[in-house]
Image (cartoon, rainbow, N blue to C red; front, side, top):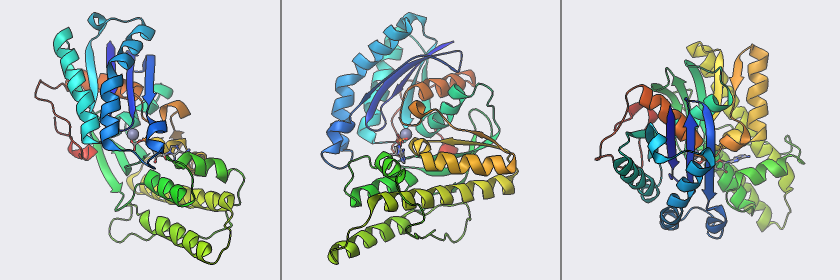
Length: 338
Ligand code: KG4
Ligand code: ZN
């Protein structure tokens, strides 16, 4: 089975060919980061325009690298939710037109289910059910992956996502967008115990997250230091932020695994590239004898290989869309609607 995947939910235009569920024949990504960097974050209208300019070329390249024609495809999968609406619309409309012209089924894919599927590409033995912690620029979710196409959210962020917290702390320290990777880099030379940062308490569901208190405390600390003319060691602060976020993610994930009886844990989303989060979860799983899965670094951020892979599972489960498919900016993974 050959599936073309298309991704345009944020600032990466991507296309990929996936064969037989987990074998990636090509994965092309055109990133807009350099352009958005000037503004300190993604400018939605610029993102839409760049997707519009790049999507055909990226798709042609993915087909060429895989040595596949449109006629060879079994289906065309596309991210339709959640994300920046104007950005999603470019991918959805393009995929819809391609599916119509090539007379192929159109397969809708939820972006977060795509991030989870990145693990299938890297770990051929991984099968549901398992518990997945998804941490990206817009989401922090603890998800029961019940099957390839069924998900139950048991914890979510009440405010900022983990990636957003990394990025906002990084911005306050003067690092360029997206800042998560810069915190990771600076953390390598820092003392993770130099600053004591809060683990925000969350009332109600113990598996929900809250990262805004941590962010505010970092921003306030930097302001106070600035007013007093003090210099804060950014390596130490980066290492302390990374340690705190890693601890929060690990504590919640291990708590949920124990309460819900999972011994198989996966990590997904852009923040899964973070060395501190990877090491902390890996260690905690080792100590408990849990199986632990995480994507290779090239599949942690947005890409279309994960969309093509999840699209293959959706297609096998009979999930296809007709020509009325629309993009949706906000849609929880456990209430997917087509
Ligand atoms: O999944 P993703 O590419 O886009 C969304 O779907 O949101 O995630 C992007 C997020 C950004 O917040 C980025 O700073 C963060 O992932 N990120 C990292 C690292 N690499 C990417 N955060 C911490 N450490 C990293 N190494
Ligand atoms: Zn993403």
